[in-house]
Image (cartoon, rainbow, N blue to C red; front, side, top):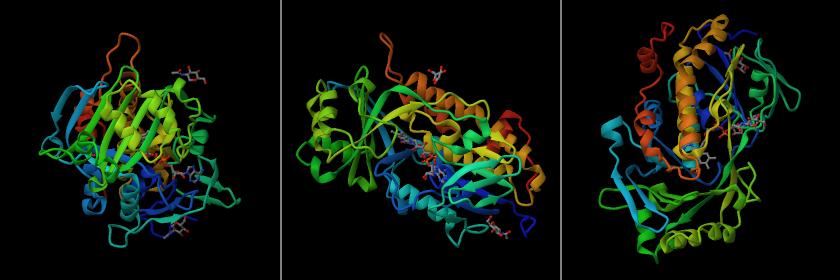
Length: 411
Ligand SMILES: Cc1cc2nc3c(=O)[nH]c(=O)nc-3n(C[C@H](O)[C@H](O)[C@H](O)COP(=O)(O)OP(=O)(O)OC[C@H]3O[C@@H](n4cnc5c(N)ncnc54)[C@H](O)[C@@H]3O)c2cc1C
Ligand SMILES: *[C@@H]1O[C@H](CO)[C@@H](O)[C@H](O)[C@H]1NC(C)=O
Ligand SMILES: *[C@@H]1O[C@H](CO)[C@@H](O)[C@H](O)[C@H]1NC(C)=O
């Protein structure tokens, strides 16, 4: 049945991750329902940083920094595996890019995006989240029909598949199932409470920051690295330790699998004492295999579009996966102003892809080619070198103007 209010489209979003919640927020002027397979209790206990490109968009939506308690990156410090400083550079995210570079606890970011999507006092109307609602398949992309695991069939003007790296929406759009390739690296993750770092002043300083504030620290080895940054007001130190797959046979692509702290330490046995102290301080760790995804031939078919990891899963080396998901979501808001006719949906989804494909694919390929552990004789290129491209983004309208892409007149 068509939507009773002709200024609104019915939108079904598959997945209430960062991409899905952000899309729901960007589309609050339409009639949005999110279908989420889980019961949505807790996000994975880990941190996620958001560059100013994404923070700016989320702040325009009303992101409340007081709810996040996220330190802002004021510097980036790279050391060798031996603990000697390569460089420490100041970051002026607010001044240069107009928004902070936020170091978030995933649970806090997720909760805050959920608040933006569902709060009564936002623009338009709150999105409805249906939990424990797994979509079994996108039955028909052209007519916008999905089938839930319990057999219920739902239809909508727009289907946004924000269902992550194992996306079933992607299967419908591409007409085949894709499995991302192994990248050759795995990542251990842990959150370390401040109390466990008190005995080592250098480790504690990575958490507490310096007179300029807080920041990101990387101990860079030739084929492995340890990245550490504070989150939640500096009460927790987030660490990501990237190692060659060959040293982490037990790793899988699932997020919740526990890693072996002994093996983790063993992989970093040649690193300096401070790095090893930090690794030993971890109360446990998760381990997962980093996968890489070739750019897809298309993100859209009929009334379905892929966003976030479903469209362009990327390696984490630039910390842009969540950020690109938020940018995708913002672009959907731009291509679907109020009173968009349902008949225009397929072409508007093509437009959304046109707005987003080049940039997301470029960031995806930076994350893969440049930042992956170096081939012999190759230098590790760090995220900083792409900071201007990554961070200097001012939303889909600005992008369209610069690329001469015509946008629909907003109602
Ligand atoms: C090691 C690592 C570190 C990272 N660090 C950063 C970082 O610092 N900064 C950053 O920006 N990004 C980072 N990322 C990437 C980032 O986490 C993702 O890119 C981001 O969360 C976007 O995910 P998403 O919402 O598209 O998918 P997901 O987070 O995977 O969410 C998908 C949602 O869809 C639901 N779902 C799936 N299938 C179905 C179905 N059939 N029916 C109903 N619901 C379904 C899932 O339950 C889930 O809630 C990192 C990733 C990794 C692996
Ligand atoms: C909004 O979408 C839901 C779910 O698809 C539907 O049940 C409801 O009738 C729609 N609301 C309006 C005003 O059309
Ligand atoms: C990824 O794997 C597929 C087969 O599964 C293969 O055809 C493709 O070349 C691989 N891509 C890369 C970049 O290795």
